[in-house]
Structure formats: structure tokens, C-alpha cells
Image (cartoon, rainbow, N blue to C red; front, side):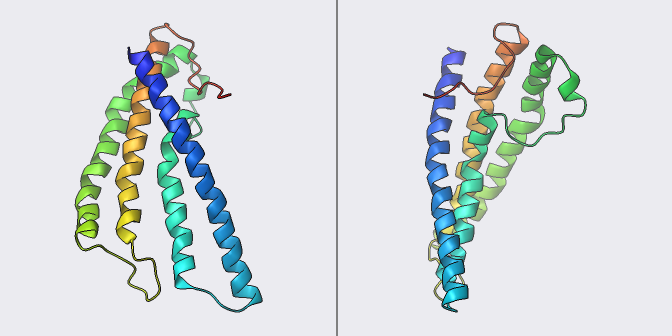
Length: 177
């Protein structure tokens, strides 16, 4: 049952990751257009400049769980990389509960009032011509960390199965066809 849950979470993160990749294409197009207008036509818009960092922030936050799914997140592997796979799985499993889950929950908990206040006042850009929905960007903090927490559940399940020797310790996501 737990392994099925991990597979479901992984499949969900795969969908999110692929959707976010389209936002990356949009970000490239927006930046390209902004540069073109700024340097060729000597004009620019606050809305477009804010859109760039809104897209970047959204991509960064929503893609964190997907990045973790493929084990591509930043980690310091000085000692860890030299350990046998089963021992690494135990370390991953334990540290998820010691550091990872508490950190995600703490960020969600502390961001909640910040985001709620932004929604309450329907916060927008303080700049004329800026994006009127800054509350939506701030909401991505909670959504992104919730997705990261969810992927952490999957990783913890896979680490436990690997640590117990029930599965190979390779925690990379399965190939998607």
C-alpha cells in the first residue's frame, strides 16, 4: 500500500514537472521579448519585468518536488556518496523526519499568515502598470512546499523500502514512456 502511494505521488509530480516545464518556455519567451523591446525599440513595461520574476518564482517553487523526484536536488555528498546504498537509504529515511519534514512544515506554517494577509488585501504590485495579483505569487510558497513535502513522503517510503532491502536502493524515478 505504501509503495502504491509513492508511485502515485511520483506520477503526480511528473505531471506537475511537465506542466511547469511549459512555464519555463513561457519565461524564455517573455525575457526574449522584454530584451527585444528594451534594446531595439527602447521601451519596456513594468508588467513584463514583474512577469519575469513571477514566472521564475513559480517555476522554482513548483519544480522543487519534481527535482527531488529525480534526485537532482543539491546535497553535500562528501561522506554520503562513499556509503553503501542501503546505508544511504537509512540516512535519507531518518533525516527526512529529523530535518526535511519539520523544515517544510515550518515554512508552510510561517508563510501562512504572510500569504493570508496578501489574499485578504488582494495585494498587487506597488508599481503603476505592475501585476495586480501578487497574492497569487505568494501563494506559490505554500503550494510549492506542500508539493515538496508530498514528494518527501514518497522519498521516505522508497528510502524505507531500500533500507529494509525490499527494493534496490536506486531511488531515481522510473522512466516515463
